[in-house]
Image (tube, rainbow, N blue to C red):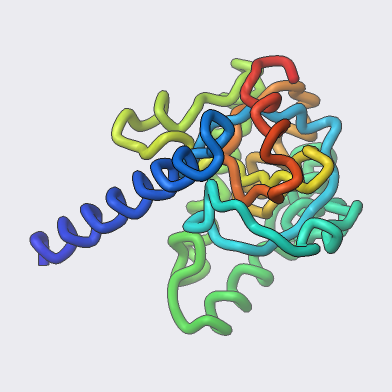
Length: 212
């Protein structure tokens, strides 16, 4: 089983490396890498489009997908629960998030965000509370590399796609952390690149700079 897992990790590494290699051949210096690190001002971005898994990170995607992005992240149930809890001290169990998670677990018949039952859900949200206090104190987010030197670039960070206008669109990955950044009014956080519209290939790298 260990050998099987090792082979899976090797395949993942090869695929992720190939994304950047192929993009560099096709787009030159503007070709993105898988999981490439960018920086986002969370106070300026509310557009939300939950599509394309992290495995699509760094891919150039044609079409009108970016036009489907909508203002209104505040309508997301996870975001709503985070606001109620961290801004207004409403207990997690009263925000409806426990019921939401249990329904998802039952619907998919397995683990959701590492949770398989109510006990797991409670423990997960206790850990999120701890993380919130750490970030509140430090006023900063660590990159995935800082958290784990073995991570592939910023893979696992907040997921942001880049639309045709060059503006970031929150892709849903890291909703709790994005909510924390919003609530704490942070203005510069690391994020993982999602998919990029080809019209933005010349400008997307502006988001790699701190303070953009």
